[in-house]
Image (cartoon, rainbow, N blue to C red; front, side, top):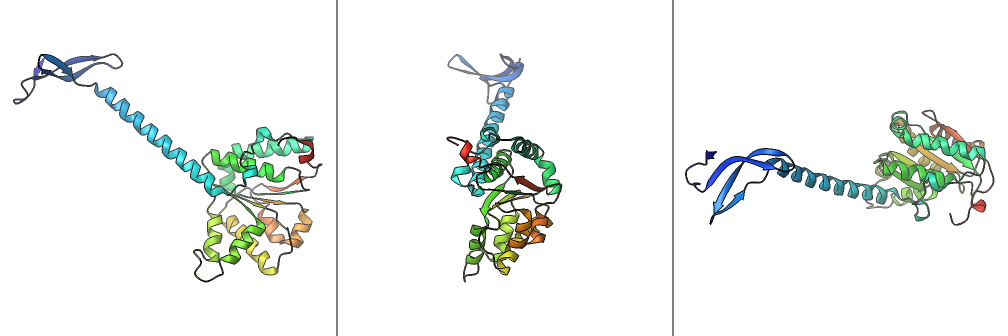
Length: 258
């Protein structure tokens, strides 16, 4: 037993025992004949570590909420995942499996900038599967954003007004920063040459930064080349990606409550 320093005559240091960590040296103070033992330093460290873990979990949860808040995924598609997509044919099963691998290997997708155009008729599950990909990668901590081509063009046009928060260039860069972009309804409506250029600039900037993009359209790739731009379509077939043809019957008519 070691006597504590002068001025602490009622305190001694001695070997104590912790039920969890075993023996340790700690101070024992006598107050009115009652011994108060110093806490096990390993227990204190464990408690501190647990507090840090809980803080980190809370921070991670807030970051995940922020990721989903920024994603702009429509409410209808927020719950989309691969589990609740039931393929109606072998081709649909193959595409679902391919996109499952896309998610599982998203680190490599990010390295290669692997992009796709989903081409097919209304109700074949193009947006459902694209948002399933988006939701899955966001659960993994990546960032993603959804926008329709018409909504994107509308945002750009609003940026031309005086005293707007973001310029056209800054708004485009906002869409470039996300790990994955899903741009829906490509070729919907009639684009002017200027509008075609605006869409191409976004796809081209993401191509330059090696950022993967999924484009969605009811049109064939040949028609997309005419309605949007041949070079724009090429940007959606890079890094080992390409055109995925959703050429089966209307998926929505085969499902109930989905």
